[in-house]
Length: 64
Image 1 (tube, rainbow, N blue to C red):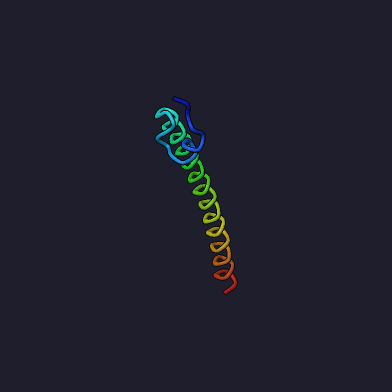
Image 2 (tube, rainbow, N blue to C red):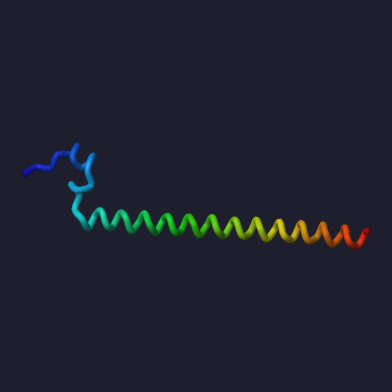
């Protein structure tokens, strides 16, 4: 039975289960990596803002 290419594009059931699982694992790893990068950058931004605000409060308290 020949495989219809349009069936492959429209339904995951036409793909072998191991291929679908492998693609899902790769996509999951990429999503976890992306979330980790976003978390790292957001923590860096928060840390920088804490340093800037803390320094400004310190200067304000000293000059007050």
